[in-house]
Length: 118
Image (cartoon, rainbow, N blue to C red):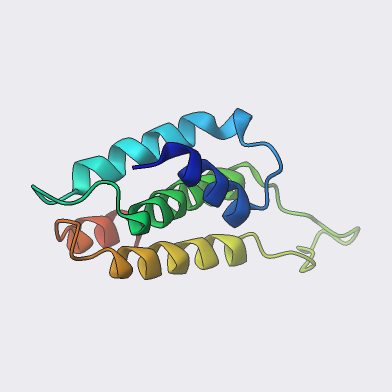
């Protein structure tokens, strides 16, 4: 797997100019992706870079959502100017799409992941 390509794609997906502060997310995504490979799968397949970047992006959006604070108006109601779940839902969809593209290279662990996410 071309880790540099994974990093470029992660930066693109997450709209980051510099992924250095998030390198541990990418490193963990590379490990996660490699652990999901079927025996004998071609690790140089470009689809794995997209899948790995999608994993890192999903973890990134989870982290950002966990850090976010709710905005309150003067009256104490919640402001509806920004929904932090939108980027996470998009990242989850992106993960699903790239996992589907690489499904012939990966073991079937959908049930386990959906139980963890859902």
